Every structure is written in C-alpha cells, then in structure tokens.
Length: 362
Image (cartoon, rainbow, N blue to C red; front, side):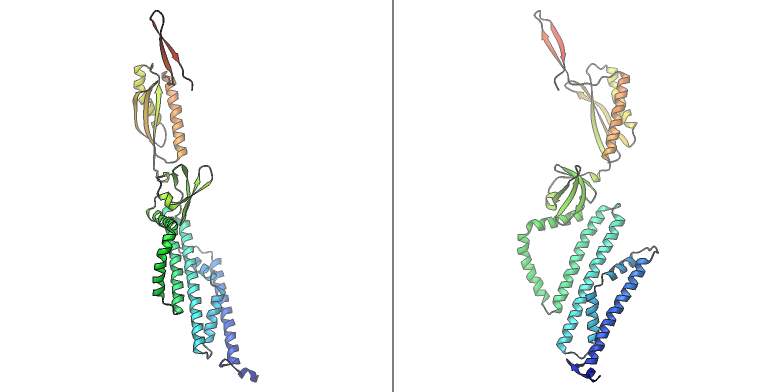
C-alpha cells in the first residue's frame, strides 16, 4: 500500500482518493436528500394556504446534476493542496455553476407563480393576467441578463465598458429592427393601458372575434368563422378597435312603418304598444317610443331601448319577443304594416284623374 503515498500534482494519491470519495458521497447524499424532500412535498395531501411547499418541490426538481457535481468537486478540492491557478479556476467554475443554477431556480419560480396567479385570476381579472405575463417575461430577461453580467465580471471582463459598447451597438440594431421594436413597444402599451385583454370580443376593421393571446409581436384573435386572425401589435393599436367585451348594456333602435291609411286614433296607440312590448321583456329598459316622421310609403315609429346584458344572443331573443308582441297587438288593433307601394295617377281622355296602386318589383 506504499503507492498510496505517491505524489500526484502535489498531493498524495491517498488524498486524491479521499477527495474522490467525498465528491461521490456529497453528490449521492444531496441527490438522496433532494429526492426525499421533493417526494414528501409532492405526496402531501394537506391543503395549504400558500404555494410555498409546491414551489420548493418544483425548485428542488429543477436542481441540475452538473451543479451538484461541480459544487461537490469544489468542496472536495478544499482538502487538497492545489496551485493558486487551479484553485482560482475551480472557484470560478463553482461560482458560474451557482449563478446559472440560481437563474434557473429564479426563472422557474417566476413561471410557477405566474401559472398559479393565472389560474386564480383569469376569470376575475384577465387584464391583470396579461400584465403579469408581460412583467414575468421582463423579469426572466432581467434575471438572465444579471447572470450573464456576473459571469463575465467573474472572468475579469469590464462589464461597464461592455454595457457602453452594447448601448452604442444597440442604437444601430434598433434602427435595423424598427418594425420589431415597434411591435414590442406596442405590446408594452397594450399591457399597461389595457385597451383589451384576453377573452374580450373585438372588431378590428372587418375582423370580429375573441382575443386568444397577446404576445410581444402579435395578438391573435379567434374569428366568428373559426379561423385565427393574427395582427401585429403596432397595426392593432393604429386601428379603430371596438371592444365589445367592455359593453355593459346594448342600445337598440328599431323602426316600424304603418300605412298612411291608418286612422288617427290608432296612430296615438302605437307608441304605447311599442313601449309595452319592450317593458314586458326581461333585461330591458325603455328609453323612448315616438312617431318619427313621414316616410316615402309609411308612417314611421321609432323605439329606443336598452338590453341590460351585453350578450348578443340575449339581445336577439329580446328583439324577437318584442317583434312577436308588436305583431300580435297590431293584429288585435287592426293596424297594417306598411310595405313599398306606389300610387300612379293618370288622366283619361275626359280629363278625369284615376289612381292605380302598384307594388314595385323587389
């Protein structure tokens, strides 16, 4: 066993073997401990008020084996007599591993918390979910930026000069990527100003549909006919957007025409009939009902009311019920609906004028 005392790179072989055993033991112990804690947290059926236990279990599962191995090698190297350069390299490698693993833990923690927040608040406040998603992306970018800067600083690179150089180069990149950056800033405007959120029903130019996704460059709308319409954020903000998702009630204006031969006493009753037809429906509020004026072939009555629910199907059900009720009352009162007609007057040979009613072709 004398060979155990042989020197290798300034340390006896026995010390190298002890360091190797420490590395294997440390990695095995850490993996075993992480596995036990993660399984215990995952198997826990106790309802919790906070997501802390789920978060810890998730982060433990994201702990990488290379990180454990590098940390174990660094700790074992402390038992050896190594050169200054070797020790410096090991310290820097261990620090890099720690920074990268910390970035992985942080970004995954942000993803977990955002997913939990989305599940809890999507139905209550979709705009908050959109904002948090965008802020989560910014947070992830910031975490990895700080991680890269720490690694570069650890290697002795002048981070200040690098940031200055990147700033100058960034101006040139910004000029070349104006379209992409325009969409990016438009996305930020959508997130902060909240003209619409996921789930809102929009009309943009000739497109109508529900907002499915708000990204950094595009917003995706599911149209009424089923296809997905993809619009760039800058074009979307430059358009006239009608957001029906913010509608609290629907204003309805409809006109009914009756014939000119309708007696005056019947004309007086028509606004009352229209008002009663509206008031008899649920989820409605009458604004007014009036004789609007004289049309080309009818006496026109205009009714304005509000449907207190924004749903389009509810509005159509209400309007149909009103139409049926008006039709029934007009039949009872003997009031005739008008339709396009013309009366042509012709003079005979004797100079007598005769009227002939004609219905124009449709």
